[in-house]
Image (cartoon, rainbow, N blue to C red):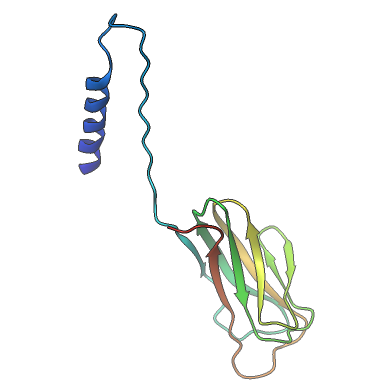
Length: 145
């Protein structure tokens, strides 16, 4: 309801500002500019809740949303030393995980995106230790509002 009132007010202003028919060949334009808050988020749904093991580990359906004009990065934080490990995104894009570090950029986009795709972690060996923590986060590039 509020949106309709605002739209009608804008139309009324445009109608009032236009010159009368035949009043002259003047041109006029109206520009409307808006700025929205930067949103950059990633989530996983429907993945296995069991411990990570050698082979394919389906992490779930990844939903990514970022409205940053300059793009964004999706980063996976993982344990150090996962030898020959990689993630598979969507239709088969393979991204090797950093063995030396604890984070890997799995998506590096230069434009805003909304996407849903499957995410699978493939391990060459079962991770040592009781708990293995995997974290995903999205970070916008450029100026944020």
